[in-house]
Image (cartoon, rainbow, N blue to C red; front, side, top):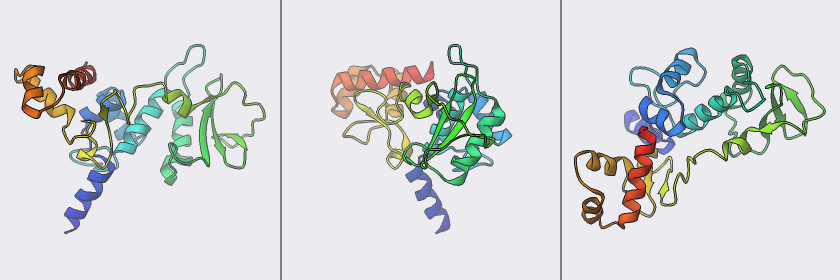
Length: 214
């Protein structure tokens, strides 16, 4: 019974292998594994044996990856500060993507700030900052990346649907299954006929999966 409950909860949060988590988050698989070993982003569905990441883990992977990249003239944020920012937010159960009471921003020197609902701006070390005019908001920056909700016009991702796998809108048909048929030699027209789908949507789904695999 407990296994059934655990499986249901995992499905509701999304459930991704390392390869799939890497593809959807845009983080190299070797990095996904490395961060799991180092305790940076630990897979929350299953941290041992076959590691499995949740949908929230994908968002965190993408956020950490963005923070660790050089952004024009702005240097990458130090991993020490990234860890501290996660400890003060995600590790405490705060939802950065839906909770307006907390915000992560980065200044032009790459320093990370965790802003609170009281309007205070402090570095992860607790130092106060008064001028945040040039700081980049993490959510605003990530909004320009390929979506983890609506990645294409007809493809959607919902943690509680198909274990979080991308699917064609208004169906329960996963894009990964369509790509598997294409890999077996079925052309887009035949796949569309098998499922009764518009050809354009099947082609869109296949192009999305091929982009993930690239």
